[in-house]
Length: 114
Image 1 (spheres, helix red, strand yellow):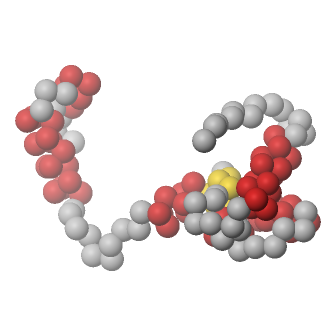
Image 2 (cartoon, one colour):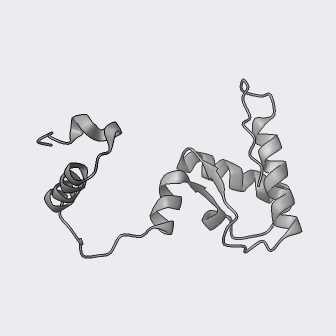
Image 3 (cartoon, helix red, strand yellow):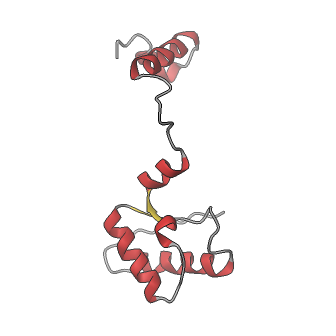
C-alpha cells in the first residue's frame, strides 16, 4: 500500500484528489469492505465528504466508512464496560516495567511519582 501526503492551500484540489482515490477504491472493490475508511478531522468534515460522495452518485453506508480518527479508534478498539484496571494500577504496571527494563529512552520517567 502506498501513501501520499497532499499539501497545499485551500482550493488547490486536495479533497478532490482524495475523493477520486476513495471513489475508485469503492467502485473497484466491495463497497462494504470493512477495511476501507476515509478519515477526516471533524464530524463537520464527515457530513461534507458524505454529501460530496452522494453528489458523485456513489451509494453506500458512508457514516461507517467516512469517519474521524477518534471514532475509528473507538470502534476498532472498544473498551470493556467494566474497567479492567484503574489509572493507579496502570501507572503502577508501567512504573514496574520501567524499573525492570533498561529502556534508556524512558530513563528520566523511571523514578517519576506520576
